[in-house]
Image 1 (tube, one colour):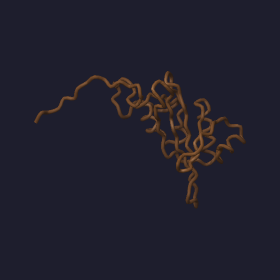
Image 2 (tube, helix red, strand yellow; image 1 turned 30 degrees about the horizontal axis):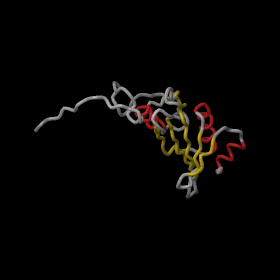
Image 3 (cartoon, helix red, strand yellow; image 1 turned 120 degrees about the vertical axis):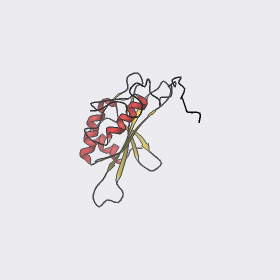
Image 4 (cartoon, one colour; image 1 turned 180 degrees about the horizontal axis):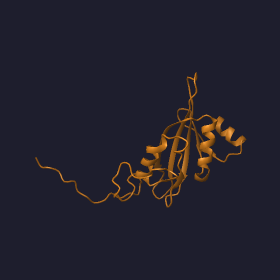
Length: 158
């Protein structure tokens, strides 16, 4: 089922795939990594001026990694803002997705967290480095195939 935004993107020749609607009725679209930045700029100009959240997840062990963006169209006098969910899938071997930091500044820490936990590289991000784990940490803790390092926490026995 195609939603309003998907129909608008088709009308303007922008490549995407409709994934239907979530349980709240929010339209979900899949965008290819190579098309994501240009479509993000178009969505911003179209009125999606607020990046509500960005997250990432591991689709399956050995499978794709997904970066998910929840965008909102905030306008004066509108009680129910229009929302859309964008999913960008990247291969596990070289997960690279263009950063949308230059479109929505709120992507800064969120993309850094996705990099830190899953190893997705966000091209052109100005400060892409670990944010939760120490810089010396090896691996990506939220990947389903992650093997925790063998360490023991030393605690006081008082």
